[in-house]
Length: 164
Image (cartoon, rainbow, N blue to C red; front, side, top):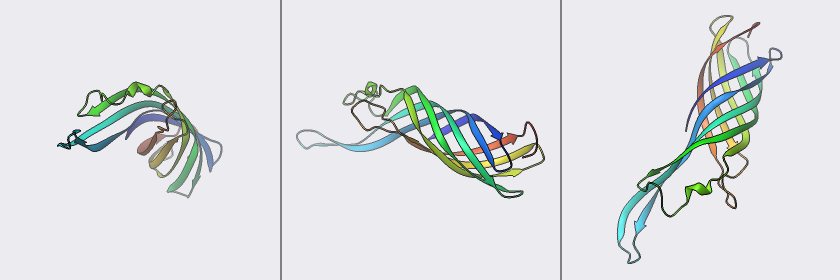
């Protein structure tokens, strides 16, 4: 999975804040299977997969702890919109499965993460975070096709007002 985004953090006090933003997130899968004809002849191993590209907006409650080096945890809901999907692998598109069954373009789920941040001065800090997004709704009617992603973030943070 890959992810790129812009996020805002509003501090209520030195510990609690709300974080939101928008990101472009790629989810998907790649799987292998062995092709065997009806007569038992083995054709070899095939690969098949799907890329799902989402625009994702989380609303996260955040708590941070520590003095100079800040540890933080965050969690809350997210909403996503499926902007693009593309099959990958040997078959383009895969004839035995109708990818257009993925008719639910909206994704709704729970996001949670942990990380650290370190201030470089009163206005700028750097941070590293790992976050997991787990979908609560299926991509297709009548099937359990949910998404799940774990992403790593590296951030350069600029404080608009007050101290970090």
